[in-house]
Length: 305
Image 1 (cartoon, one colour):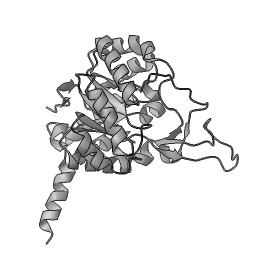
Image 2: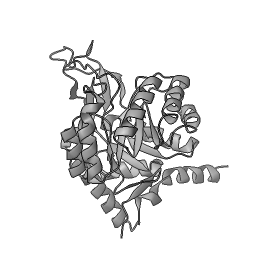
Image 3: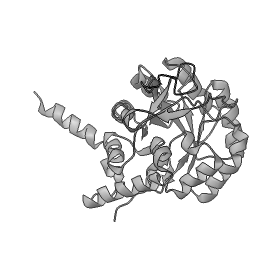
């Protein structure tokens, strides 16, 4: 019998496929669609103290099945999500609240949301905080001083020394999420060369299948340099994609773009495909896959003179 449950930071997930913070969970209704769609846990859209003011349009198709977006964070206050958050908690699924971005934001939102919602964990985005380690560590430190539940740190692919950051941040956080969308990037129709998004010159952030190899590499490296769990996100749309992330060192995976292009049922579909992959190989759980690629790399190094 294949066991699809996963446990991270003492939180039990019915399956290892979670939502990722993004427009796929941008409303209270979409949160519940993800619950019904078979997600093993719910990570919410990032909220900050001030609602975002995103220029329209915010999302367009990108190359190779990806999406390009110029969204930032939620355009409504955190309080307007409270009803949706509470509905998720009633469902019994773990609830991870995504917040950003400054130390002051962490202290205000962390205290408010832990008091009012009692989430299972917080995820904080580093996307707009900076590239060097110190401001990112300051955010992690502020949240750790404020809340008692586990903290997940989401790593931007634009962070130059992300391995060093992960090693230092492991003092304050309980898990890492890798990666955020990649950019800024630009793409447009050569027959109509006008900005495709509402941003200043049409730039946006790339997500989906084109960034999967980068996400996989960063998951492997982060899992290799520190002991805390890693959650993989970036281009996952099939069970085989998810399996690769587990083998690279991920304990869980998150999905955003595939839910936008295929609907909220993709969470359960991917979980089902993982189960089938395991059953076909008589593997008892996805946990036994974790780090398999790293073990193979270590064996290769040992065999070489």
